[in-house]
Image 1 (cartoon, helix red, strand yellow):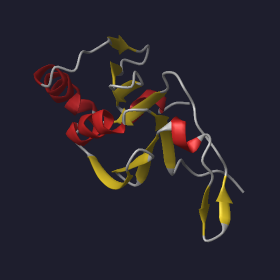
Image 2 (cartoon, one colour; image 1 turned 90 degrees about the vertical axis):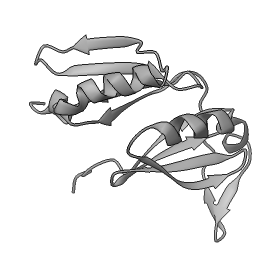
Image 3 (cartoon, rainbow, N blue to C red; image 1 turned 180 degrees about the vertical axis):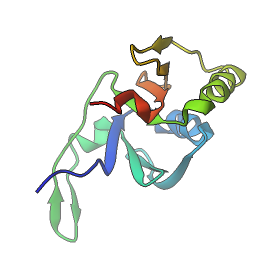
Image 4 (tube, rainbow, N blue to C red; image 1 turned 120 degrees about the vertical axis):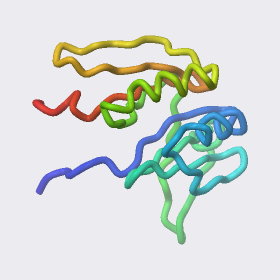
Length: 137
């Protein structure tokens, strides 16, 4: 019995309108569900990126058919790395520049894989990198 992957990842933001506009701009993400003021759900390949407003999800109980979903929420910058093709790194660099999204950092790792870091409007640290980064772990 093993964990075989990650199905969903959560980030938190209080201004969901601003964050929706930002994430719908990113190639490969598609808005799948939204509850005004509470959450945004984006499909990302076979995974889901969930963005919750902690002002709601940390204090307002939710249930699904009478089954309680635990409260959750976080404040402060979190991090997520999006998987891209190694050969698309230049296209991502151009995309970020063309859309006035500052590249905060560009890191070349010891194995030669390059990461681009930037931030969403809520201050979350986002990274685009080839999955080869972790190939030999």
